Image (cartoon, rainbow, N blue to C red; front, side, top):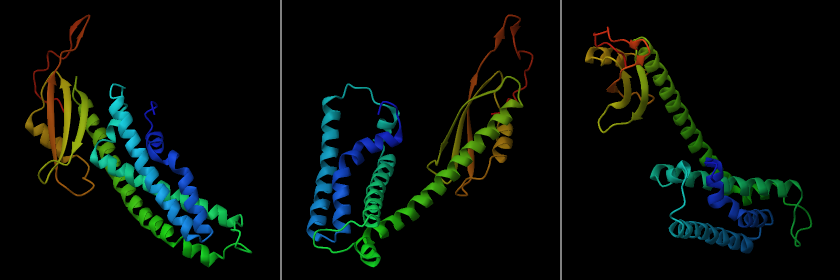
Length: 247
């Protein structure tokens, strides 16, 4: 977990400790054993609750241990919801894939004389298949939204950097994106340089920004930090008095 890896963080939180109950559910579905299925689901639910309670207790007892960015991020409600969705997806996917492997290898219980038929297998795993289908749609839509947002942010940063390169001594220190409280999507950047950008220049740069993924109007906000660049020969850019540095 100290590697700050999202996959390791989410996997270590719950998945690794529940492989036994998940395998039990898979076996019960393949064997069409309702009693063992209910027992496996109950064990899975109790195990998940136990993992959460144990993690909470460890966090309270060892609250002095340093936390990585990924650990801290899971406390945010949106990321926590995404982690829960990913955990649930992993559990269902592991269960279904285990059932498929067991069915293909001809697993059968003592009371069965041959392996389950394909239709029986699909029937017993219909809930898992339905859940996976719904999750596939949800996660695909989420992936498209995430990719669109990342492309928008990357393109916007590149455009701002190019505009800044056109002004002598300008340096783009930071760019942040927020949805804002009104109808506008806000782009906040921090610019360092010898001359502040004027409102006309900001408006011109704002008009060149790529379209927002959701079609919202864009508002560019620039925080200017005056800087002086000095070399052994003296101060650079001191002869430029015109406030036209681009954000």
